[in-house]
Length: 118
Image 1 (cartoon, rainbow, N blue to C red):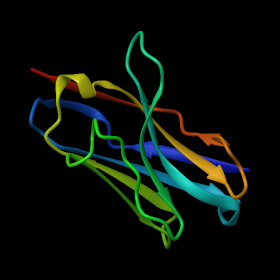
Image 2 (image 1 turned 120 degrees about the vertical axis):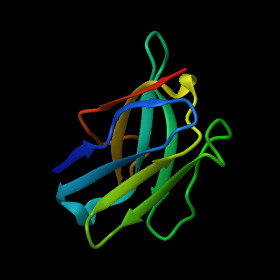
Image 3 (image 1 turned 30 degrees about the vertical axis):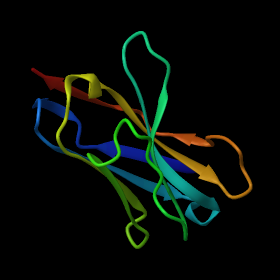
Image 4 (image 1 turned 135 degrees about the vertical axis):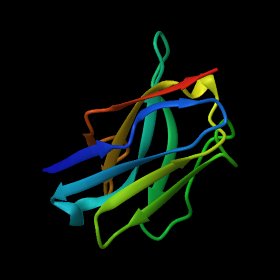
């Protein structure tokens, strides 16, 4: 089992920045990928960023150039640096982890609210 604990959400004005953290504990060696999804009210959960061991970060065009994902393997922590935030970035952000040889999400964090005001 793996436990994911997120921190760093909050309220920020448009154009501002936030950094989310997700600390993993438990069977860390089983984890290949970690990253973030987000879900806005009334919308489907969407993938925001992925960090894979030994691979390049993967982010969708909607956040590329504004968001950066990084990973500290020594601390078993993944970070999401969010710059130039827009009101449409408002959502609950969920950290996730995927095991080796898995196709889906195996573990979820509890979610952290990010609200961007005009």
